[in-house]
Structures are given as C-alpha cells and as structure tokens.
Image (cartoon, rainbow, N blue to C red; front, side):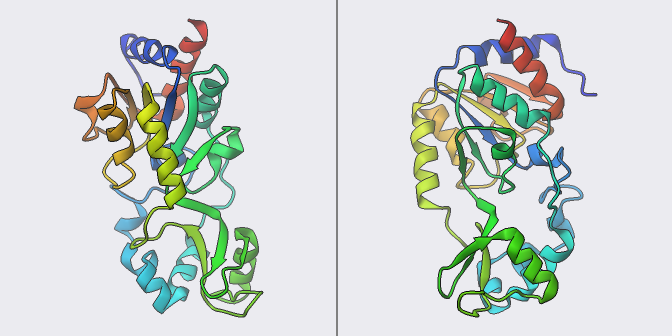
Length: 252
C-alpha cells in the first residue's frame, strides 16, 4: 500500500473541502487500477505496438483491419470501476466537484456513478460508420469483428466502422473541448488524477484553469510537468490515496 504523509493528505483534503466549482481531470492512471493497460511509459501498449499503425486515422482509412485486429487481441471488456472512481463520485456527492473531465474512453466514471463526465478523447462504447454515419454499440461491432475482421457496417455494408475514440491525427470533439474549457475557466480547484499531463491539447485544460486562478491538486504515480504549479502533489496509487483524502473531506 502507498505510504503517504498525513500532512499531504490533510492539505489535499483541506483544499478540496473549500472547492465550490471544482473539477477532476483524469488520465490513464485511474483506469490502470481497473486492469486496463496504459499506453505510454514502461510496459505501455505503445512500447509494444506502433500507435501510428494501429491507432492513426490515416492508417485506419487505408486499412481498418490493422486497428480491428489489434482490438480483437487487446481490448479489455470486463473492467470495473475501482476505489478512485468511487472516491470521485463521493466528492461530487459532497458538493466539491462539478464534473469529471477525462482523457479516458472506457466509461468507468459513468459506470461508477459520476453525474457529469466530459470525454475529451471520445468513447470506446460506440462505433460510427465513416461512409453513412450510422452508429451502433461497440459490443455489437466487437461480436461482428470476432466473426469477420474488420467488421462491415450493417446499414450500408461499408468497411469503415470506427470507434468513437479520438485516433491519432484527429481533432478533439469540439463540444467536449468547449465544455471542458468553460469549466476550467470557472473552476476554483482542479483535482488531477492519473495523468502524465503530457498529451495536448487535453493537458491544456488544467493549465487554463491555473491561469484563471484555480488551485491544482495532483495525485499521480509519477512526477508531472505541472508539479511545480500545484498547491498539493501526492505521488502514489489513486485507488489508495483518493479514498483517504475524500474520507478526510467528509469528516471536515
């Protein structure tokens, strides 16, 4: 179990207890504790696979089978929310979080019960046909993919069924980015959890919040480029740290 100084936990709890328009900003480090592989860093999927071959929009348009073959072998479909997800739900219930802005596409925040989730990188729970724009649930596409890779659109027969995640080479969803920026500018506290804060433009959200006067609280396994900007930094596992912090918030 991660050993965290009591003073750091108390500082984080005091900061979050004062939040009235706080937001959480989450990355892959939250999902890793639910068994979902991370992408970057030591042992990450992108050290084993070239992301520009399996997750770039140009490659997908040339040969969608590369993505769907990768998905067939590496997509995790049985993940469940972990204590970090549930701690954020409790922080929202206590009135200190307005929303979760996430880089993750797995839907675990919604599954845990978070009321408002802004998905900057889209969702892995739906696919869209690039030919006719028909949409269908991801689990249906996965079943089709197991029968024939790549799956074809059941509406038009097209071969370009794409997950509604943001692939390399694609812009972030305009509405999601606009919502996140508006909340960042209005936030008094940003709780950053499980993000390396190195992927832009998503990492610009907490930076924007800081420039508009928000205080930052970072909970992450490794140091980030924003650590010097934060009021509180705790290094360790989010699923162990956040429940302790939120427990102290509830007691204040």
